[in-house]
Image (tube, rainbow, N blue to C red; front, side):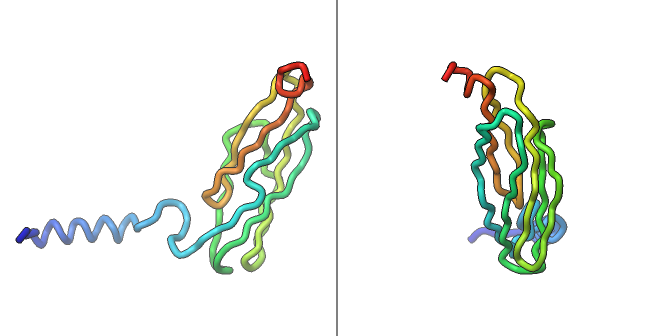
Length: 122
């Protein structure tokens, strides 16, 4: 029989209470994100709307971006439905580029073709 000291159990419990069992999103909230794959064939860029559905109206979500050519224009949520509007800037490079957003904990992959359609001349 394995024995645990009460101080070790209390320390472990304190870590769970302080930091919680989940990271980022509320553990009771689940999200559906659509689309999770976006392709821009227009090298001049454009806007696209990403739909988010939450499991409960009290659930909130975040949007994170790391690519400067992807801009978050707005984030709206009403009840369990949310919308994220993004803008993809024009691509003047000769090849395609790939970026990513994180919406409600889900990766949204964005591919934009260059003037040479992926750099292979087609």
